[in-house]
Length: 338
Image 1 (tube, one colour):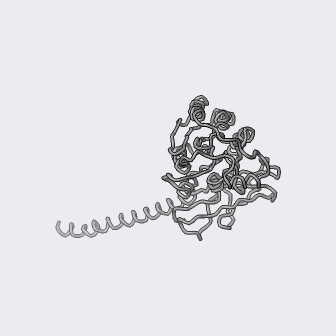
Image 2 (cartoon, helix red, strand yellow):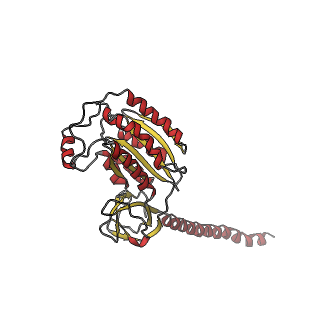
Image 3 (cartoon, one colour):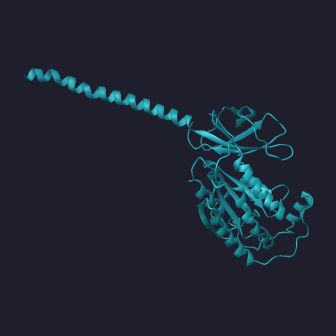
């Protein structure tokens, strides 16, 4: 009986080794499969707007009309969508702009709702030296209108300034007057624009992924002391969450730039519109909602193995028609190894 037991003991010892080896192989296969799944679903999403030589939006393009480059290397467009999608929009109002500008902007805010559909949801923020959330995301226009009335009340308490020396005119002349601080002037309070963008981004990042996410900011683009957040930090967060920034500037451009508004729009593939008059304000609101809703959305899995994790990867999108102006995000930061 003892001999029989001795014969069985070696088999009993070998069995766990076989099980361990099998588990090791299964884990290795699962790890490889998981890696492949992660890589194949690591899609880079690029919303694109296309305008012709007259500034009109171009529709009806197909995937074959586009070329995408990452750090100069051609990419294969795996996903393509040109269908309008519902939007989640964070509307940010800078009520620290000049009294004249705020008096002009306040009654025009109600025109913003005209560009949105019943399927779109919006939240409203205001800021000067602090950021305040006026409403949560809602599809009810009346909720937004209540928020806009808060801005109207602030506007009524502000005094206007002397009339501007110039209105309209050539862009170069307006730039010169703006540089020397003629025309619109703020009241000297702190402008925490970066903090406002950060709060709006945090509110948007958890909205459903099937929605196009935008920040529509009405501001003079000025940034002063007191910001807890910075442009670089916000830009990274915006790009990680596929959020675009569209601006309406109440101040003149300075040699083609609207300050921080241009910085955010250029990085995320948004745009900045002139809001220096009642007419341009209303046009800007209509243009932004049309542009955001009717973008082409390109998606690709990066073939770029040369750029290390944490480095910025530059994106370039071209169309067959070389006269078209293509607006898109400038790149992204890959945080995980490929």
